[in-house]
Image (cartoon, rainbow, N blue to C red):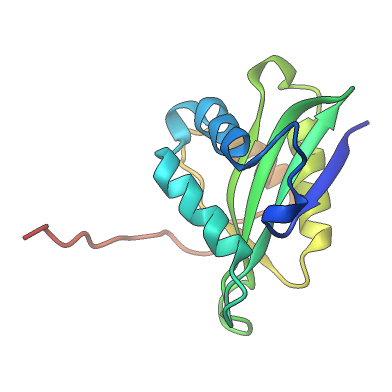
Length: 150
């Protein structure tokens, strides 16, 4: 069974696993589906923000005392027309995958949320099947317009 720690601000980190460790864990274990450390850090800043419409939380999952998974959940500030939360990142150490840890981390994090949850997942990401089994469904295809840098 996993021990899940909810992290709502900088002071909630333990000395054995700090913000830098959290960022490194996500960066290393998201593999090709991840982002740069700067982007991960921004998602943490957002989760820790006290500004209206912002906020969220992080999760650190330990198994037998070892960190095996992490998650970032951000508040969207758009209650009523967009899901209230967006699951930004979730990663499980590759040596612990296939044991149900990812499912447990996501399900318990959803229960902690006071509202609906959205996420973005690439079509070829193997975790897509996990999200579907948990109950995530596709409502829209996301489209993006990228402005050229000037």
